[in-house]
Image (cartoon, rainbow, N blue to C red; front, side, top):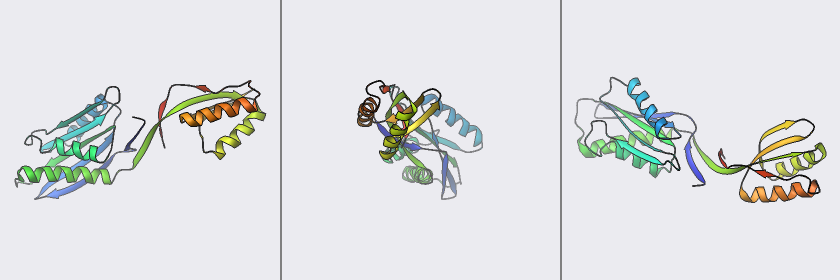
Length: 207
């Protein structure tokens, strides 16, 4: 995976179905442990609710996805939440849908729709962002080369993520493979081969 969609901050959405309240809360997580912590946090916050059903999709090398019905009939709550998350193309998120029972039974079909609708409402209120895996690349140049490099990088929309100024100017960029190849060649040209672009470990950046 080189790109995925996630949420920037927490979001929530609420629906009412036959007097039962369903409150969906969506949260960004990086791994399963963070998802479990968030689920427990929501259970404490909504301690008086009948159910706090949940699902999450998180991690890469340690990828995990889980769904929990929290006492609702099997596959009527956690799975609809999980399917909604995946259908929306989200990753590294955890959703908890809290139900305050209104006294009227909804049946399995009604429960499935209600949990799906609450999850959808929370996602629709979220600020969804795209994360892309890019190369971290660093270089140190003199001030004359810095002026040329800055002009060319800004013209091409290359992302500078850090800079420091001393006897030399040290710069750090987040670049695609193609961008890194171009910038490395350009730096070599403007410094007569004295400076090279050092490629570090890739990382995730919001785009």
